[in-house]
Length: 172
Image (cartoon, rainbow, N blue to C red; front, side):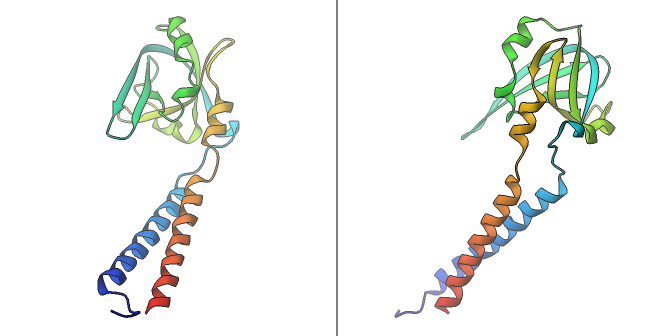
């Protein structure tokens, strides 16, 4: 075959173009559908008493998913320190202070307040503290969760789709 591409090459580029457009739209939707929690005013403080807590680690072929769960007497939900924020959590100090059956303050997203007392809902924690001891800082978790990651991914996939479109137009 001279300068024309084979049918398989054109098909692969078209499939790649469709996948890039789909992923770009998906990440664009994720960015706008899930409001970002970026400031302290987006959080609600709750005074709770710890009933129990557990640390779980799930592993698959490529990644570990450590999660710390806290159960309280006041709410039927599980509260969690997400795997993305676990490195910010002072777990050793938390466990050393033996906080079972003791009051603490936690901060959750204000939009998740409606999910309190729904046992099937797991609520993410942004801050855990007791008096002057800060075990998980909302300033740090908010800083880590900031940024338009989904928007940047969306633009990246749209850029790749544009590049593939140019290649397809050039070869046809």
